[in-house]
Image (cartoon, rainbow, N blue to C red; front, side, top):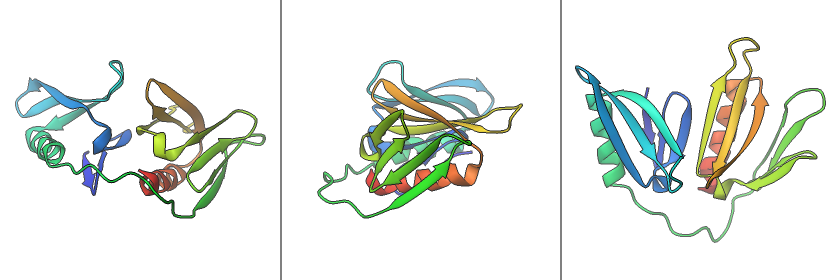
Length: 156
């Protein structure tokens, strides 16, 4: 599944602002199916997604026609909080993400977000990628991940 909306490219397990992408490469797997790699500035950072020829063409056109936004001069006001488990909590206030007693990051510097569902617990491991680093946390609900993605879009 590929979803293209405004400046955002969403795959089955990741979403990115197209302006963070340095280049796209692909390899033919079988008739009409391609392994597509979406590359970022760090050499070891990439999103890999199987795509149809039509999806690949859409991504190529989207990448070639991207528009680089002006720098952020002001921020919309926003807030959200999520209970990760009995002891951990994440809060987002005006684009600043805080995990209690662990870390803080700015959504404006997050290049892309990935998630993967654990087969046993059915919880989601979420990563906020920034440059060569990432911050990882677990969430219970895909709806909460979508809420974080919507907030991230506000600050990209």
